Structure formats: structure tokens, C-alpha cells
Amino acid sequence: MSKVAKVFYIVVFVLLINTFNVHCQFQTERINFKSANPFSLSDIITNLDNQEEQKVFGKLTIPVDSLNPNKKYPLVIGVAGSLGWRKHHLDYMKIYQKLGIATFELNSFKSRGISSTVGSQDEVTIAAITLDAYRALEVLSKHPKINKDKVAITGWSLGGGVTLFSGWTPLRNAINPELEFAAHLAFYPPCFVNPENLIFTKAPIHILIGEKDNWTPAFPCEDLVNKLSENTNINITVYPESHHGFDSEEPVKRNEEGYSFKDCLFDLTAEGDVLMNYFKIPMSSPVLQKIGFLFCVSRGVNIGGNSIAREKSLVFAKNFMKRNLISP
Image 1 (tube, rainbow, N blue to C red):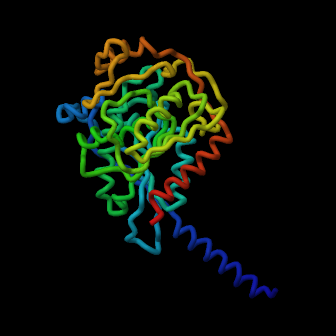
Image 2: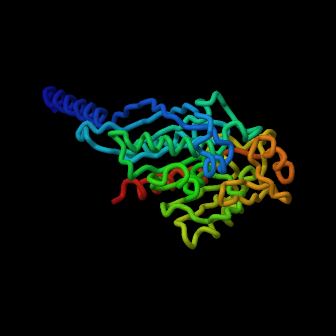
Image 3: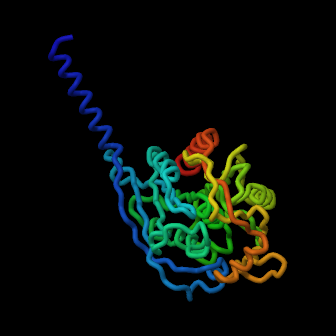
């Protein structure tokens, strides 16, 4: 091959690489919005207008298609667990971005100056973060680069609970009945409630959880799926020999501060009150919640990854979002 030909092919190759890089770049944007600080789900359903205002932010990452500058993108809103955003959470977000899906990292903890809720579960609650997620949806649905009809939600542990119960119709109706998520992918959520009202979204819900999870156990999730499956598009995958955080690359460790809910099942009223076992008193404040936990909660949980379950869940999540956000 002549030197001229070699130079020609090198130039063409460089141009192709540069074109690819331009075509596949991402832009990031901090999104600020107003939410509130409800403690309980009932605060949202029965008393939302009187909740303390809270400023919240998150990170929006959008694929930039240089060939189609007016394109609107599907979106996944991500919700971290009690330890905040971790590497394995971001692994999923990067997968979605490579599919051409925008992502939004909701920062409910940092917005409130909190780094972890592992030892208490009362500084930032499922109720507060669920409201944050819907307020984010309201703002992002108006973004010129986002397809408001193709916005999914995913989350891990505490964020998995947000992902699951953002599909509960009484909550959605109280916050904004005009908006809904297109899909819900919940990783090891707290399912240990018995809802009086079994009406959930018609959008697909899928739970991924470990067989050996003693933080948010699998069997209440299986029971909940069975209760809802007749009228709800809900399914569950239980990974064998897997603990809480099975999709992490970290080894399984003991966390002595974490609450184990393996012996708990709380009634959830249609008004959003989570009731103590035996006394049926609403756990509507941090003090009442601590009292309620005394009847069934213990300290000490296992958390860490299972390489087989991790790989399977990464593949499942990719296909779930492709099916629900990209496929016609």
C-alpha cells in the first residue's frame, strides 16, 4: 500500500472516530425544583398542601444526537438507597445512556444535607422521596429534550420502595393525577406492607430481589406481587443465593446498623397510614415509627454482591428499559 493510500485511510478513520464521538456525546445539567418534606404517605394523601417546602436538585444527562438536534429522548429517573448513590447504581445509568436514554440522578439526600439513613430511616422517608420523584417528573416533562410519555423510574432499596409505591394510585392522585411513569424497575424494595387499597398503575412494574435478603426480604414482595397480579402488570425476579445489594461488586459484609425487616408486615391504609403491629397505631412521626419498629425490627443485615445475579440484573434492566422506552 502506498504512503498516499495509508495517509488517506488514516484521515478517513480519524474523521469517522470524530464523527462518532460528536454523535454520541452527552450533556449534563443540574435541575433544581421545589418539593416538600412529608414524613408519611398519609401526609401526602391527606395533607400535602401543608408540608414544609424543600428545594431539591438532581443531575440530568442527555445524549446529544448531532444529526437530530430536535430529538426528544426517553428518560430514566434514578433513586438511590439508604447509603446514597453508589457505583453499581451508576453502572445502570451508564447502560441506559448508551442506549440513547437520558438519565436523572435524583439527589434527595444531598438536597437535605443527609448522607445516609441506614441507622434510622426517618431523616428522609419514602414519602418525601416519592414526592421528589413526582416533582422532578413535572419539571422534566416540560424539558425540550425529554419525551414526557417515555419516563421510567428505577431505584434501589429505599429508592426501590419509591419506585414501587410511586405506582400506587392513591399517592399519584394526591400528587399529580395528570402524570405517570411509563415503567417501574425496583431493586430490592421494602415490600413489607399490606395495602388496603390494591389499585396500582397500569404501567409495567418489575421487582428484582435476592433470595437471602434479610434487610428487605423477598417473600413479602412475592406476596405483594401475587395480590396485585390480577389487575396490575407486575412481576418479580428472585435471584438465588443473593443478598441485599446483589448487584454491587463489593463482597458480602455485615452491617450492624441496618434494620432487618424480615419479621415485619405492616398494614397500609387507603389514606397512607402505616400501622404498628398489634396496636394498629399510625407510625406518623419519627418517635411513633421507632416504637412501631420495636415489635418486629432487629439490627444487623448482610449486604453485598453476587456476580452472577449482578450480570443477570444488568442485562435484565437494559432489556426492560429498551422494551418500555425505546421499542415502538
